[in-house]
Amino acid sequence: MLVSAPSGEVSMSTRRVVLIVGALAIVAAACSSSKSTATTPSTSTAPSRGTSTPATQPGSAYRPTDFSRPLVIDNKWSPMVPGTASYFSGTVSQDKRHESHGLISIVTDLTKVIDGVRTAVVWERDFRNGVLAESELFFVAQDNTGTVWLLGEYPAIYERGQFRGAPDTWISGVSGARGGIFMQTDPHLGAPSWSQGRAPSVQFNDRAQVSKTRQSVCGTFDCYHDVLVIDEWSPLAPEDGHQRKYYAAGVGTVLVQPAGGTQQENLSLVHVVHLDAQDLATSRQEVLKIDADASRVSGAYAHTPPAVPRDS
Image (cartoon, rainbow, N blue to C red):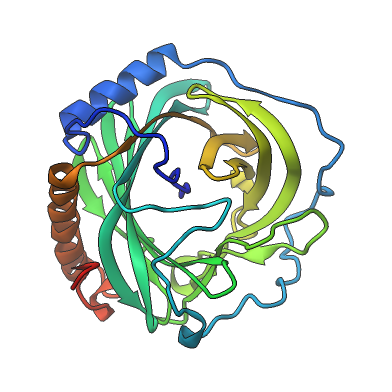
């Protein structure tokens, strides 16, 4: 699951947040003390849909020439500043079983060229009951209109902390995969849904549509106004239901809630830190190791050049 890390405008005292032990302590504390969330009712809701694929939004294709400054991601709803570490906590429920769920998202200072576009590398780690379940790299870039694009994902799966592979990896331009829209420039009610990416080889075809606008929501970290709600789903997996992601203007994702599906996932933003130079360097080295390993693990990933620091 991808989230848009907050912009990093909230800065706290420096700490070794990229170390697993420290990260787990923060996430565990957040899970045990998180507040309940509440949203204001709204009449501005998109109509319900079935599982068929709606029409693609106009302009959902891109060209490398559309990206003059791809690493400047200042979209109002999904700003991404290098060095921002965001912590989310919540629960996952399935078959009457409940697990604590923690997510750590770091906007690294690394870049990777994918399908002719230089992208920013974001590193996310997903913990279930305090144990690493997934470590994912995903790749985003902002075009000249302010639209943020998703151009690939490398989700490495772990069981009981042991690496089990990355079978759902997809890279735009490889094996028929094509990047999609991560966040529109001006998302608004009534607009058609859009593709978040398409990769036939791994059955990835997620879609999104604006569900609500101008909401007020309180999570664990803070209360927010002028919140945008995006409905996400996969037409290829109707049993998964939908996910509602809440985006605060100038911040990014602050809340994730389920809407149907066999697995109910809830997440709330609980902590934001802007890494200092040492912590950022530590995360950089960790991601470079993942990047090198990924080229050996995944045939699709092997088609990409190595990730490099922004100033390279």
